[in-house]
Image (cartoon, rainbow, N blue to C red; front, side, top):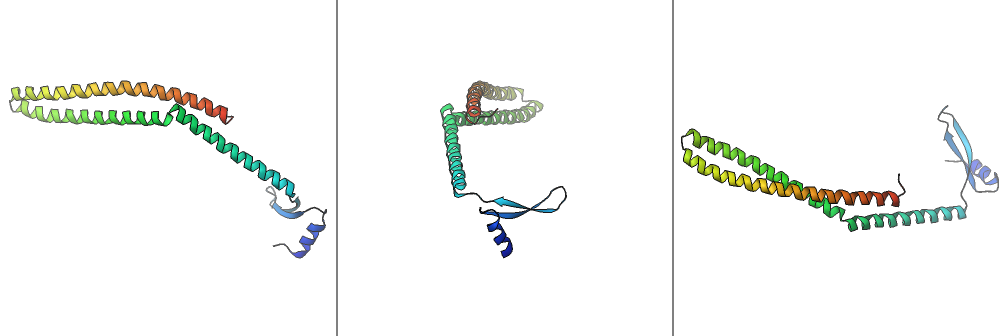
Length: 168
């Protein structure tokens, strides 16, 4: 805490509002005392006004950014891509499980000498495999198409974003 003598010196220094402030010199570690002028009310008001303008500008840009995301439907496209990817993963798991079940059941029937029964069961498994393969192919096409749309929309968004925020 400053003593009374320093306060008196500060008020007499140059007729302006200001104060002495201690700083530590990073090179020597020595404490250096410097006179710091206080800001005038006009300077404080100007800084507050600038801060308000910067804040308003920031929120306006954020709103424009959000509006562009909605216009390009980026979030919807991301959700669709993620959904297709998850469905494809589920189909791949279903296919693996089907193959495991088929090997266990058919292998047991063939080793037991029940070839006719095994062939009939193999036809059912084959139909299921074909159904899964068709669904996978359909999903892959939808996924590729949606990814292309999302990538185009994303490219447009980033061009807009860089222009809006003056980056690059």
